[in-house]
Picture: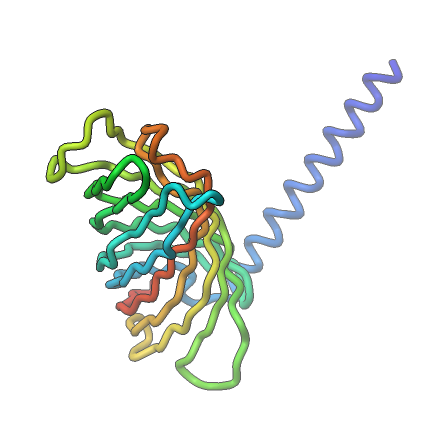
Length: 211
């Protein structure tokens, strides 16, 4: 009997929470005229070099360019969420007692972030900050023949910020910086495992469409 009462109380509380969330979301949607936004950006990607603690193996990643496509939704004047897909192709160069290995790979970036919109009293300028998580998929090409290499996915933390410049009611320019923190890929080869975390800087500029 007591368990049933607790369960009933819990369900009532959950129902009340969902109802409150629905009311909040509905009112929040009404506060933003064009809550949805699609972005297309060109990116530069610069990865920090990495070396094992013993110095036996080091890794350098070639600088590259790519693109980033995203969709964001603004819940109210300050909070929103965003999902992004990015692509680039670069070469990972490993050097150590094992000799030198170069692996060219297509890198796919999948991230989701919370977006904090920063209020400013300047027309047509909308700054923001973001933080989230996702995955980086390293898919080797056949340019360099390295035995045993395989496709690998690494979890990543993403942070950053930028500014949306409104040119019209629905269209504008975005300038952004994103930083990604993740573990250095080894392409499933033990002798390339640095067991190190690295940082990828990703500045970008592009366009957005609001609706």
